[in-house]
Length: 199
Image (cartoon, rainbow, N blue to C red; front, top):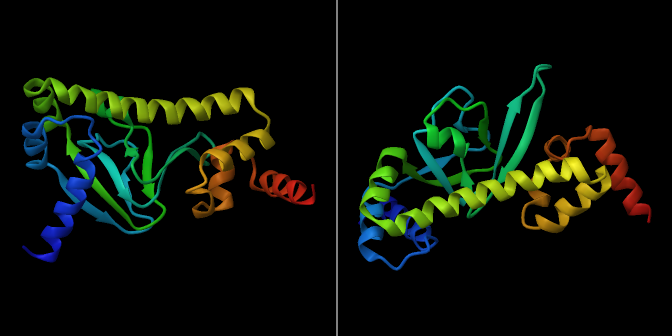
């Protein structure tokens, strides 16, 4: 087995161990169609207007999900790191063009699950429905948290809560990207950080 094959096997097993099932037949079937891809920093996993043919599981790395508004500004709606799913899930389920870009902020390793094979797995194995629920919960929780923070928290609260809930990635994100995600200007975020340092 080559180094490349060993690496692929390692990441596929890493992903399969995250699926909440002990059904070895399902895991064997899944491993037959999973692929592993490596991306460089700034490379795109998906671009707006594309139909996502796979859902991506992040084994290593960090990505941002964003759209471009009517003023031409990039609005970040989420960061996806290790053990997260990089997808516009509603678009993936409907096989409709996405409005979002998903871009790597670091060198990234992704396990990809093709749409057609996932549907086949759903039909063959009832256990596989747990995987669909896992993805949906992961994506929905992440995106609902952001919307609710914009609605119910002050700018300072949003920043502090982000730091508290995202310790593993907070020092991997630029101020510009973090400000966009938190729904504020970069200068405002710098001011909040400065004020907190003085306290």
